[in-house]
Image 1 (cartoon, one colour):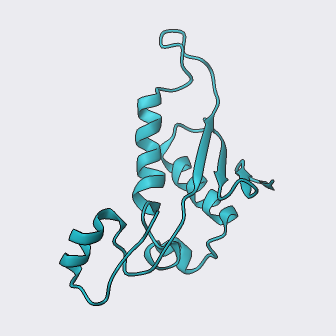
Image 2 (cartoon, rainbow, N blue to C red):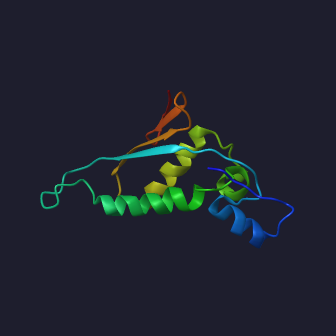
Length: 128
């Protein structure tokens, strides 16, 4: 994600020029996040959980607080916690745990690059 902001322009002009990429706090990059849930398969729906519901929870837990943000300046959690990929995974896990049915969240995987992948299962963090 490009996070762009020109000090020569007003906030309104920046928003018009850069759209959702506008951010006075600098540039960023993209993470790929994979969320795994587990549980009993519902005999009626054939699903562990409704995918539409999961997508809505992910929107609230991941996209709303993190998308197009400078983690260190725009996300209060990271004012006290270093914004490593590991800590991003923990942040996402904690947010999802508050929204999902109890015990259904199994794994959060955050990929920063092809070589940097973090898997968090609530207790131990695995760095690949």
